[in-house]
Length: 623
Image 1 (tube, rainbow, N blue to C red):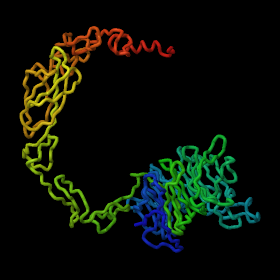
Image 2 (cartoon, rainbow, N blue to C red; image 1 turned 90 degrees about the vertical axis):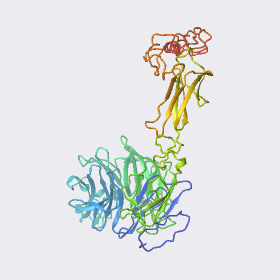
Image 3 (tube, one colour; image 1 turned 90 degrees about the horizontal axis):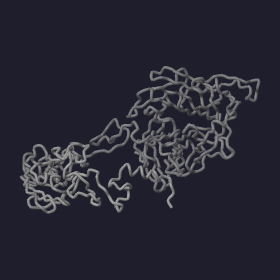
Image 4 (cartoon, rainbow, N blue to C red; image 1 turned 60 degrees about the horizontal axis):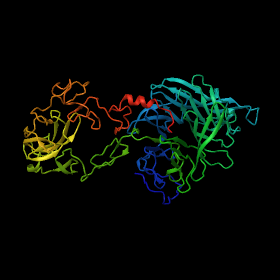
């Protein structure tokens, strides 16, 4: 396990390699801050055989931190969701499963694989960087024109399908003269004019390529292989705005939002080199690059090599500082910034430990198996590579039985609890009841079951609608709530047995005595108890035609569809108000003193005609 602590303790600066199973990490979180949610993955290393792939959460806790000799360089997640890294001893890329075991090997066909970058697309196609030593004539650059031939490391890119068949290839020396190199020693017999370290497949298929030793970022037309444009170096298609600092020795260049360029600027060759992350805005029509924002190394230090940058889903930025060390710990570091540019926190490595690249993987998208990795634990998972919760004898658990309590892992690694005393005299075993107790002995009537019973009283058979309706059950009154269409409703909790009830309208007891039963157990649930006040029926006569003014969804007949005492004007302020009307037929006639100011035409209804009348005055000025 990694040592995770706040970075307010000095870390001893040791010059020798840390030859242990994990690397010591120090995590600094700014006060009140965390990293953005997700997993930070990287692989700090002291040397090729002392490489430590790490996975940290947003709080800086290490869930994976293990030595992995000769594997882990450029550890990251591909666009197809798989994890990959470069195996330095074998010289090829490895695609990994959820236990970090190799499932597929990707190698450059026809030349050596370059360890800097790989991109595996969702369709399974892989773009691979390659390198090959060739001899070229560079008479315009070498100090001795009589000896113009030099061996160079050529820049190669190749696209392969999932079977390794080459679909597309590109050679740098055919499109970019090696003499564009701004950091070459032309007296040397072997030159690395390109030093290709990153590429990005853009929407539409073009490829963005980052060339460190040319101080150059280019966009390649994939269909033709020609350069769409070049930014930086001696033959740039762009000029830099007067207030913009030019990059040197770039890494990890990426186009975001179509015209924003994000890259890691090592700063090599500047008068006072300080490494930074930087974002430019590219004016593609005018050919001008303008610096939008930058993130300078926290201690103002310089990285001679390596480094990465990533724009996060939150708008923040994650930066791995390559070989630029922190002053306090002597090794490399990873920092995360909020979208505002403020520092969220840092992950610090011990002396002489650096990481080429760091990436943030969103929550739920990291394809690594998580589980208990303690071999003596009850739930040890040999395939897990992310630390998870371990269970030991005495650890709380859930045996899945709702009728046990105090569940713990026993000595045999089983989950066991103590049976709950159901208290059969006070437990309801009827699933239909609100207080059903699944632990009650089945088939036992404890006499405590409670059911929610709904009541509805229909008053439309009365001469006029009452103001109040009350439910009287076992001589206890319960006021009901007025609803639509002349009904009142409410609900009660009742137990098993036979219940007698009546309705009261405006304090007058309905002559109809009603009865219903709640047997134990209840066979088919409980339906709504309905009654028509003044009649023994469950529903009152009315009108079932929804287009009729007397419509009621509770009506049992259509006797009111043709009008009658239940249909009329129900607005009390109307001159033709009917005290016995239950259903309003739209005939209300209001005086000019109507209390309804929205009723502009005075017909007792706020309707379409009122809207039309208002529109006649729309746009006019009030005095």
